Amino acid sequence: MKNNYSPSHLFIVTFIFFLLIPTFSQAQGNVIFVDSNWNIQAAIDSAMVGDTVLVAPGTYAGPGNTNIQLLGKAIVVASQAGPGLTTIDGQ
Image 1: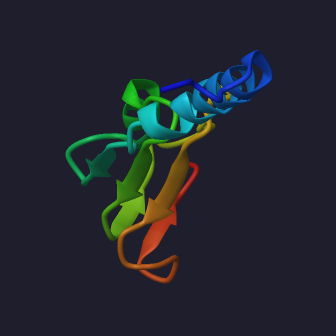
Image 2: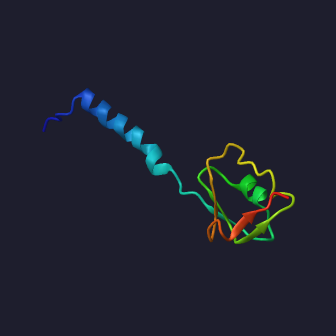
Image 3: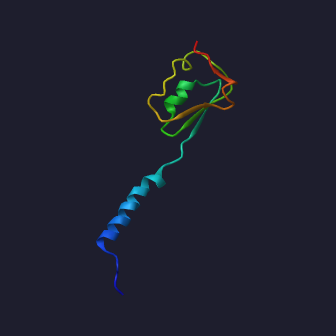
């Protein structure tokens, strides 16, 4: 039985395969929970690309909760219960 695949067909299939590898290998990010015993900046510092930092309801002030920097990371920082129940005081 003769193989009807030309070199160009094999090239196209191989090319598409290697294009799809990054799509399948991307891991889903972790969720880092911040409560009143931890500070937001420490959670951001420990976060990796794709992670989500969820901040518990409350008021956050003091070191680690002011001048928060995302450090160029592609992460999500959000309140667990919405902005009405979570405040970053900035003091």
